[in-house]
Length: 457
Image (cartoon, rainbow, N blue to C red; front, side, top):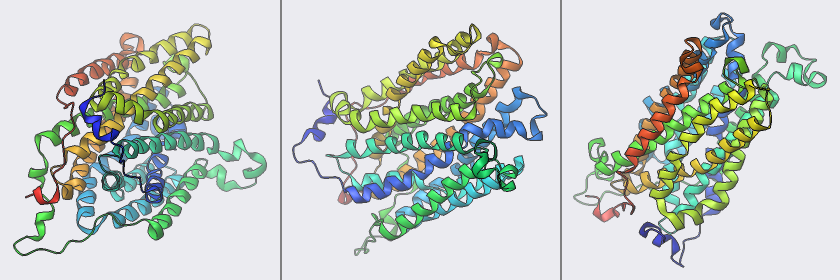
């Protein structure tokens, strides 16, 4: 039987989604996963080619994980500022600044020839970009209780699309001097900068998104005239009043889900790239890109077609709990894939296990749509929606900074010290996944309600 929170979604008078504005917003959002995911197929090879590892393949996880985390480290310091600023000056100026920052970052990353310049490029991206929280605020403002499931379901679809296209671009276009000698082999530039082409392609997408948003995206925050006796600051609650128990509950669960997800995502390319004898599968960068892209592709299709009816049937809490539970078998499948490869190379059993992990990931990805809905409904007022999403994104940035470097470093430690045959990292992640289920018990079955404007004071 459907939960009570889904009743508003079944009303016959569902508000139509503003399709063109949502298209632009989601097009802009796609820049985020593209810039973050495009480096995954080649980042481990790139780091391995730098003198920083001293030729020790077992240390690649440390340095690659740090690169993957830096965006979120720097974003954690600024995202709340950007989100709160968007409550005051509007969403659109902040989005444009973020897109420009992503463009500069990707161009810089493509030209990087040292570990230091790689670090600077990723930090630049995080510092100038606060788009994630702002986009979620705009999505909340473009939808209402009758169409929120449809709207929020599109956001993970966009991320999945970026997670599909980004790795494919990164894997297929990396080192074009050798991959496409007839086209790029004539230019020494591509030999000097073997990973510039995929970065430049994504930078071009970001700058075209900048102009699309500049000319066609409509502002969703409208300036208000101060009524007599109403202070200018009444529209925006102070931070201590935004941090209500329900905001803390929603953000905590969202953060734990994001931590498990980013740890899994960081382990995947490392696991695929590492030789079989070092606990991986020994895939080439193009194959890594295809595998990572397949995860995103199937997840996106599932979210776009299945999420809304499943949400209406089971409700937010049941789906979110199921999402968290899938991490346990997903992490367990890593050592089983390596064991099957050790005994006969990559075989049908290995691919079956990889497919099973992909199916579980598709189910898990529904949890993010539910997390977005929980955070939106937890906001103490409509004019603090940006700040609420900013707090959520700050926490997400922190855990996404910790997750990659922690999981990949633990991967390397497990190998170097041969703890549980190199599989100790997966035991830790399974325990963390099981512990996260405790936090889900504090989530309500029926969604909170955001007060109307006249109730804010």
